[in-house]
Length: 220
Image (tube, rainbow, N blue to C red; front, top):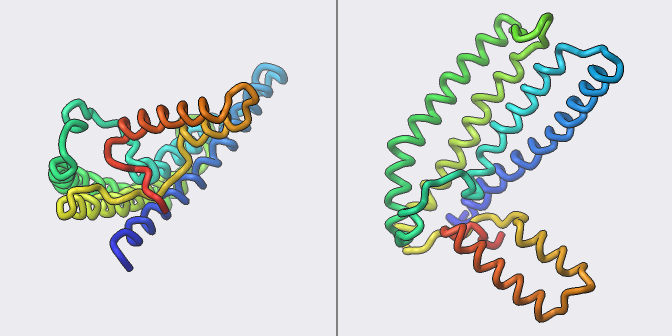
């Protein structure tokens, strides 16, 4: 397996888990709508729905962390970073990954595993609401999400090493972006000719690439 295939494989795992977790938003929406209907129309609120919505949101948030890292989409204060050369960026990144990321995520996995084990042992239920639902399965998500972020972080470190050697960031697994949505909308418009559409897409692509800085849009 080549280095690029290895990186794509890790990106693929993070992407699959992130997109699967995103479907929990549908369940979250249905629960919120059901609770609004029951509370304000039927005057019969349900206490456990509050806990359930918190768990669904928390699970989505945690499981999408590795996917966000795979797409290089975490918030970055890049006023200076974006002006650096790729090798300088890679050198800075690898120091931050080793000094802060790896110890922090390792601590998250270790502590999360202890929390989850204790929660399963006592069959823990939520104390936020009366007769709250079980939360041991929710706490299990903590170490699982941490392990996925750790796996993607190792891939990012490999990317840094490759960039230090080649002077260029290796490609990332391509995913749907806002530019794809814009292209689809323009394609279906009867009021935009082909030349104007091409100019707009080229301009949007330039803006998108400038914002990404690190070539996230590699081909799969």
